Image (cartoon, rainbow, N blue to C red; front, side):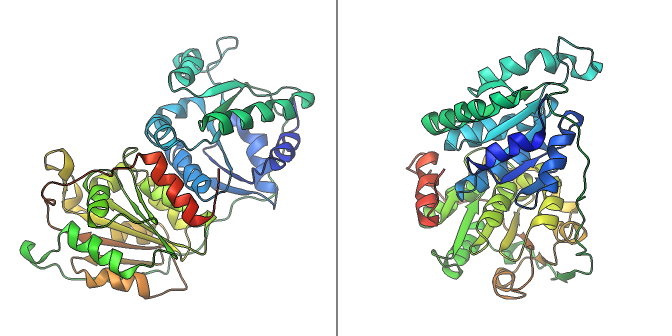
Length: 384
């Protein structure tokens, strides 16, 4: 058993000053120490997949981050681990608690995951070892983890057994930000043929954003492919997997690069998939976070199947989750308002109704995802 601050101090020597995750009772003393430490940032995510994506965004911006989660949460994290971290070659350090440890009695819902945690990490090609249970083992263990991440550009995990860390009390509880007297701009919707196309909105965004001062992050599917087709730029990142994780990846980028405007562009299907992150952005997001949901009420890239967005208002949802400014409507001019109005507050969101359909002969990015990420990192003057 070790004291949490021994590991945290050693992690600082490797420039780990940021943590994301979802609480677990095994992690309680560890998370409490992180929250109590004024040198550290802690993002409490809605789910483990969002925590992974937020950490990835921070890593792209040059901010090393540790993700803390229970092994049952690996189910929520499989997609961003396999199609974001692995595909983009973004290594993060994971601390995963071993609920359902075959060597101990635990609650029945953890039994299967306890038996397969090691195999699951092996299948996802994540290097791992057990969390150090002696202070003398902390520095060597961290050295192995950091070297693995640097050599292979892949993630590394510590599996934490029950009782690995001595208990500690929380002295600095997280306090919710009061953002509830927010503004909501409602625009009247016109007929379908008056709504803009996705291409028109993306082209307008490119014309209104500065490559040096902004990051355009487009979600998987047609959004990223159309943005690429309209003009490949160094400040653009195209999600090719991990559907729904664009907003959490963007949050990590925005936190780590407060001097850059981070514009997250996603479809209604992607936004619905991980709506919990809207609450996380509402709490942690700032004036440099711009969230654009392009809503054509269908999964366009998979054949036009309907989503459930026809009866939804993402602007009101975001308002209730702490976004100070939200817009709803079908006018491209609203995008301009999003970018230029209320510059000293944020995050900001627009729920924009658009036409279904896409460009003919739509290309895919020619460079592999990890090269697109490295290009963006060069633009941001950051490194892993």
